[in-house]
Image (tube, rainbow, N blue to C red; front, side, top):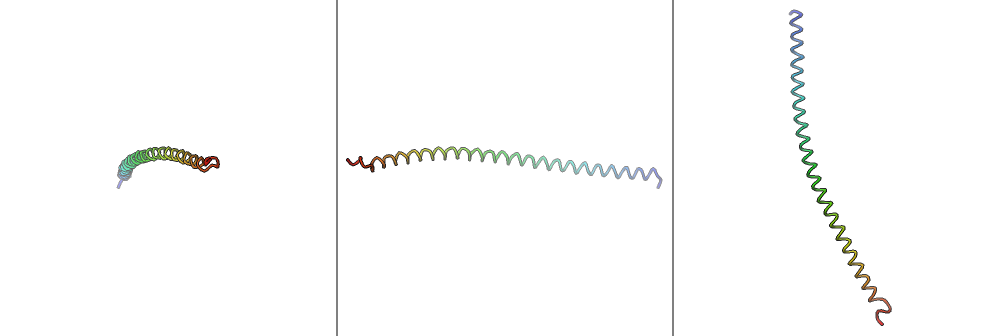
Length: 88
């Protein structure tokens, strides 16, 4: 083999390696895009769940406040009925 043939073979090897790296890079890019789309979808779902939980929390707090007010009114009525001057 001549020196020119050796150089051509080395160049061919480098080219084939570059093509292989390019194909690998393209496959990785495609996989990353797929992962990104999946993460975006999961993020949207989690945001929906968080929003629903926040609405539920607000409703529960409102309900707790209403119950607290009702209990306070009942306690006031009980106090009024059981106070010493209530029987007179």
